[in-house]
Length: 115
Length: 328
Image (cartoon, rainbow over all chains, first blue to last red; front, side):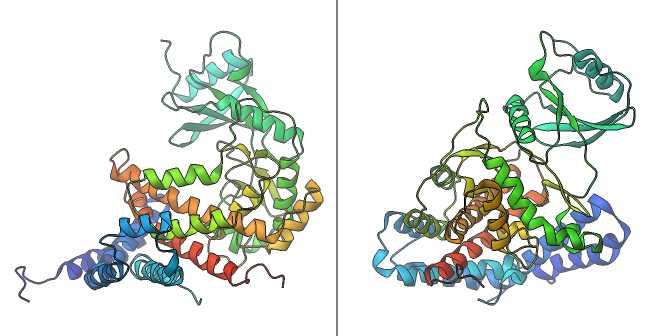
């Protein structure tokens, strides 16, 4: 696939800002500003991970939803709520837990633990 | 409308006019939350705190005054209410509802309480002290005016319906919660947000329980379960506030209240608390997304919802498999 945009990629651009926050800003600030700088670095790192993984994750999620005859996440939520998927309860639970793990791989990979 | 006292000098004069409290010095503003502002001051050598409601806040601070008085009378470690707008006759020179309470020295930052050496011995006694404080609180049988009895399941299901997002993990959690709900028992005054961050800790242990804004009538186990939610462990390895075992909390609670809550019931409330915090994360991010407050910190909280989905699903799986309630 051809890309319209010149390098750097979006991921590399975000990375460059995050690195600047880490090396130049963070050591120079303290207190509340330091805390908010740390939050900003974490947010950018999350965006980098999403740019790397997000597209494939979305495709897999859509495919997984389709396997339960759902066109959207909202539809799956509705079917769980109404009990329409009770016959496949354990498969649904495994799929949902797995999708939550995928969200964490982007949002906060360190949160995943030995299950 | 009268002028709203907003400088330290104006507020000091207003307090004296409202309460007769004289000789106020060192007035300084500590925080300004969304619903109220907090100032500290001295009268002689005594440190005092005034909390004042914002003009726009819908909350009734006088309910909290009643809650604090009842908790104090029951021996729960809380700030003592010295004066409040509830007891004023006529004009309120302070401008909006307020209460003046005793101040406590100590630490509220969980990360320090969990890790700093000076709290090493406190960490051993705190879980039981939490149980004792909650036991005393839940034994209060005087009626506090203005408190609502909120069915937590119904309330948070509605919250999920209305949040504008879909969360299959929380649907699974609510299904399990419905199927496994402990019998509805005694109702009592509960704190509603009893956790690290809202507790003042000294090197000897628990000094004061703060932030009674969310107090309501509910199930006594609600407060215990909330304290064990993983978010309130702040990275600590143990379930009770990151520092204690379930049994330490439950035993101290039973001794103080005469009511022994089972581990199964506690863990059910912990799962509900986990879902509840996840839904609250959605609300926090919504403050940013709807533009009422612009903040990358609030925005980022939206991506912490999945931490709670994860914790809730793993806890449910563990409890379904009969693990998680076996005593070790």
